[in-house]
View 1: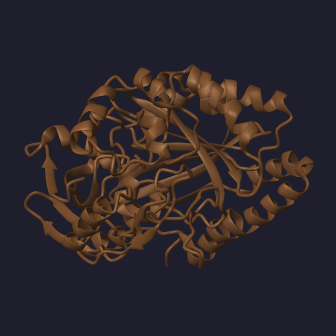
View 2: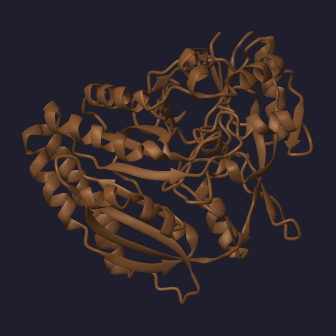
Length: 439
């Protein structure tokens, strides 16, 4: 199942429905050699090239009027090395297939985001992350990768091989080349106990440092127009496994989180005045629960209600102040926000354009139901985030440009210099990259 819609007239659309493009041609290479040949041919024809995964980015990062590379035939595990505890996968492998295949082998990634529809290369290239006190984004778990560069050659990089490319290409935005395979660090399959419980907004903020310090993975959702949050703590467990029962799981994850929530979104879109009342009911509908399962069944959950999202990383120390400003803004604005605000954390990492590059970070994500006007809310939220030197998620809505990024990323020039070297003619350029990286 591809979550990208392609119309009959060759139009490509993203998952959120807010970006579309009409590429000159679409190619689905069945091998790295075919991919390299497609890149060389595009170059000869004077067309730009972009690879697209499942279209889960809300920015136009994958849009092109040139050649669109679809990686659905480049999937599966290439090799597992149990001595070095690494696994090498083809770039088009969806995260959900990787997670299930690793679990069958008794292995797991250390940390992951909450959606697993994306391809491994799409997720890592945009900086997809979960939440963690000590474990970072999916890209931070990469031990090696290969990419086809603008001249059609295959470049392999790791900490030892082409280390300057490795520092940048783990979150490469599609600007340095087309990723064909990724080697991830893995570990023996383990169990996580998840504890979900409602908590007042003020208490979460007052105790945030403690909640962060005491849990391996802490996150919470705040429901705008209410003083309520739902918190989630995931910690390693010796077992035994106690999965969510099928009926309870269906009721909470499908009926409440997808079914009823979808209807609530429709009502809120049709009658915005009802949103605060719906939010109060929603925030009370989720009761406390505890369960223990393998990582991907705890970290990830289905997201069937389509939305548009903006997410910024702020310094972790600035989280509480930023959230207070966001709540005050919503309370006085007259905005009607029907989607909860998601808050997560990540430790500093060493990836050039990672949102957590060089600083411990907290993530604040704001969402709006697909088809509702999100501009006023996102503009007001972005003003707050940028005042704290926030760094937007590369795959989510934002209005920042290269001038701003040069200010909030100390190693920004390192990335653009590498891009000048690997893609001097801007074969992988598009409007989005022109804006965020400069011409």
